[in-house]
Length: 294
Image (cartoon, rainbow, N blue to C red; front, top):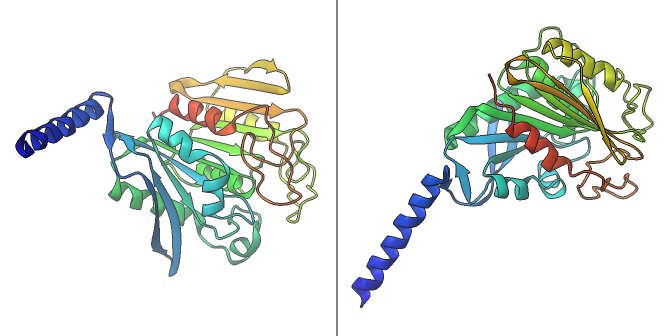
């Protein structure tokens, strides 16, 4: 009897492996692990979430927390682990801590001390590539507020990302020769911290970047896009420009939405309530999934 039970167990294991291989997903140990790497003499840390099954060549999403946030907070607040479970990709959460050096002296201690956060995240991606079979054509970056600025900085200063998804943010610092890539930017039109029109914000950092439409027009030019199509559904307006080589640049605005991650959780007291008009995580992933690096 024991021999029969053992044989059945082996058979079930073989079938499970075959099913995973057939579906393009490979079994892995599900959960979050914390890792440290040394960058310019500083010990930096990041969190890595692996779903129960990963695609054979795993896409990787880098989720960059906002100012005053953390990797742990970002993992809790924005729903990326659940999306990874559904869609079989890995998620990395780098730790600032609490801020990122994105240009023009912003933000916080990293900005004042000129911490090389681009080097940190670039080496983090390489470190993850030594742990997982990451698809180099499907590495993406997203982030909110100061973290969204970091996503733009990564697009300006590296060539490892297929697309970025900044939320409630702007672009600071020079960006003279960026590599073409796809962009989806989500912004609430009632955001007073990082204003859509580029006027100085009312938040702690007094962010004063260019108007968001100007940033998006710049990326359309970089990607040689056609004119955007515009669709509106309730408070949500989407401008989508298609570009050569399968790229795209999309701007999504939400009437009445403030400085927050649409569809996410409230991060802190007195923060703007997240808009329920859009699930930003799902929308950004669908965009990422459709745009691999060419």
